[in-house]
Length: 164
Image 1 (cartoon, rainbow, N blue to C red):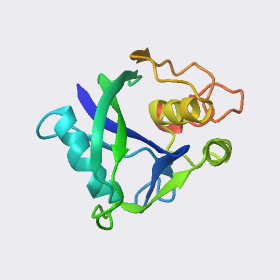
Image 2: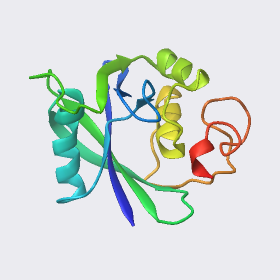
Image 3: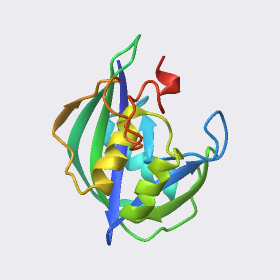
Image 4: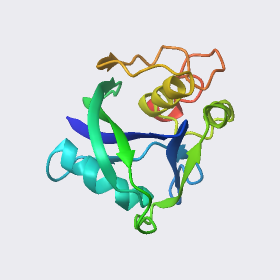
């Protein structure tokens, strides 16, 4: 099983996203997230947020657990609503190019341009936030569902090229 801590950070109607600096998805945006390798999911979320964004959580509340479709392993994304203090420093994660705040309209535009990491859980969370939908306590995702980018096509054949 793979556990992922994800922060849904909203401030004054804007969502905090991180842009990847390197790898296959360099330039793409995602929610601040990290695999749980050491400690608890909550500890991972607390540690990951300042590393990836420069912001420290002043409050974290578990709001959803998303089971992501995978062919060879169970992946659970633990989604925390986060309140943050002003950044105390620049982010220290070299895999992150920048952290930036997006309005709902700008988040929808990122999805439509397919500039969000093609992961069904991340894309669904960004789409739900942009549409003002509260995350469900437990969400089971299906790769045959419509793609969150808004194209009307199924996720797997549209943005989910890494899910094959």
